[in-house]
Length: 274
Image (cartoon, rainbow, N blue to C red):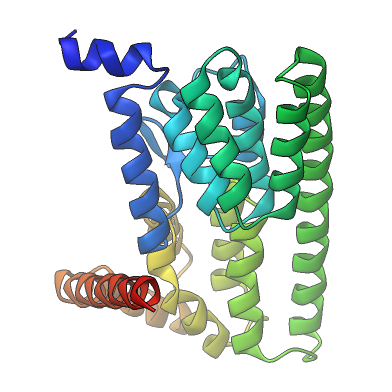
């Protein structure tokens, strides 16, 4: 270990943790999900962060946890990250200071309250355990609410009570916000694509959002559609998927994402100036 790395580690942080925090920030900018270390097929779930017995590698560093607690768009994930970070602040003034900044900068009121409660009780194990228990309950309740909303939207779609574009938009919002497991999301999307009762227009709207899925999930969907029984609408789906995963289309998506990042950076700079 170099002297620089040793100094950083003595401060309660690591060089690898810093790199991971920057990677997490990039995921938020690009809209890509944060995945389990060394396994891009599994989205990082709040339960993984709550489970202190689970080794998350560099994600256990205070910096990526602070990044998630501050910037994650969903409160269950942000709360879980703050909860996992809280015991690391005990006896370390620098990490405690970063933890306090999380409470100031986070967009989620629940995270603010959790940080305040733990800090006001001097990072006592009792306070940390209390917050962890409440966070676990909140994660379960939130997932149940998202799942119920997803089922209701599906019923409304089949009954013609919701516009297809609204259904698709909310489908991705709900599955992402509910931190649905990749395999469950893959089965849901595959079922919608292969169902004869679902109109082709809805399927094409789903495929418009294909880029939002982790690569392994995309591959699983492509494999399922490719192996489906031959029919006219399946052949159309196969053709559409071939175009979506073609190098030309991937290049277009990459260019669009780069342009969006540049615009986002420009907007951020403008906001800072003003």
